[in-house]
Amino acid sequence: MKNTATITDYRPGTWAIDETIAQGKAGAKTPTMESLYPEKADYLTVAAERYVDAGFMAKEWQGVWTRVWTCAGIAADIPEAGDWFKYDLGRESFIVVRQNDGAIKAFYNVCKHRGRQMVNKDFGKAMNFVCPYHSWVYGRDGSNRRVTSKEYFDERALCGELSLREVRCEQWAGFVFINMDKNAEPLLDYLDALPEILKAYPFESMHIVKDVVIELPCNWKLANEAFLEPYHAHITHAQILPAVDELYNQYDFYQNGHAMVVTPVGLPSPRFGDQNNVNPYLAYMLMEAGIDPETFEGGAHDVRPAIWEAKRSGVCDLGIDYSAYTDSQLTDDWNPSFFPNMTFNTHPEGVMVMRFLPHATDPARCHYHVWILLPKMKEGVRPPSYMGVEDTVDISGKERPKRRYSTLEDPQLGEVLEQDISNLVLMQRGVMSAAMDEGIRLGELEQRIQVLHAQIDRCIASSKGVSNE
Image 1: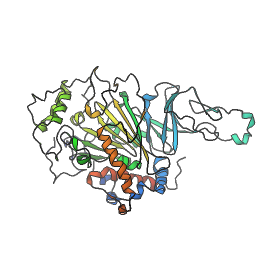
Image 2 (image 1 turned 180 degrees about the vertical axis):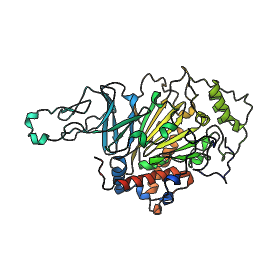
Image 3 (image 1 turned 135 degrees about the vertical axis):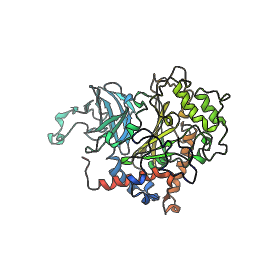
Image 4 (image 1 turned 120 degrees about the vertical axis):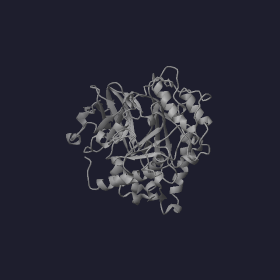
């Protein structure tokens, strides 16, 4: 285990948490960002206009959102034929519905008569979809079943396709993705190596226990960027420093703008003063893993391997099979980012999924959506505190929790995420200032932000003059 890096020899993008892991295996260090993005130096600064300009927002819409795969929802939310959920993405809205044969299809949420959106709730079940305006009827498969009072239409008004317009819809690990581009590569090809790297985590058998949406007064990229770099943690989240190494992280890069940071959990940050003693935060982690901190004989840097052993030996008895995980996965925060707008904070005990959705018309607003999914655990146990699940939340999976629409005044997202939100509100105001005429500046700890912007520009450039029909 490589754990001897110092400030002078540590370099994000080249340093591995465990340098003994062979290429192609979970946890292996990927090549550097420059190997995929030789234009990296062009993103040492990024123009502030990208966060505020309506013209750039329009370019993103045409070049990114209408051409890439984005996560629309969770397949478990529509288990039976006719179950559907609504997915809003910028100016568009989609209905994702389970078919009679068990397949899942997605359609634009738009009646082909005069454009009225068909559904306005988040979830539902339907034999057919009936437009609330003039009662045109569509089947679960999107086919037009009825044009009400058809005899009063000139047949020329009804020429062309009358069924709901379908969009590409594919799945990975229980997550449903859609793509408006009929010519896009298959989802699994788009996701590159991430499905293989994350295969130990049983996402498809996890159940949702928390579902929160909040509208933020900031651009979607600003919201996303708060979760693409650990650089801010030492001051924004100073409370984590006794038990989280937010400095010596592993940075990995993949095709199509995807990336990952692995953050060691269970040892003090190099910025934390006491590197030897088991502080109260580490003691609490030991206790959650079934180890008595009062009798623990090791020091601060022995805590992480002790937790690995506790989980593998059954001392940590949460009812979870840990056999498929690497040592790092047993403790650390595996944080993949799926271009353009989704991140995971991944642990065997659960995953926090975050989506950053563009506003329909305002580049200075976005929708921030958080799911927490947990695996089936032993009766009577609670997930570790780092999963951010309130003590009052039912984690049994017997009933899907209602979606919460929270506010800035009451985000309902826990201390750490609420600290991030407090930054974002003031970040948007800052990037709108004349003082930012030289743009934002990005360091090596912010390489995933560089990837985000570089991939956006690649998408915009490749889309010019190309139809996605």
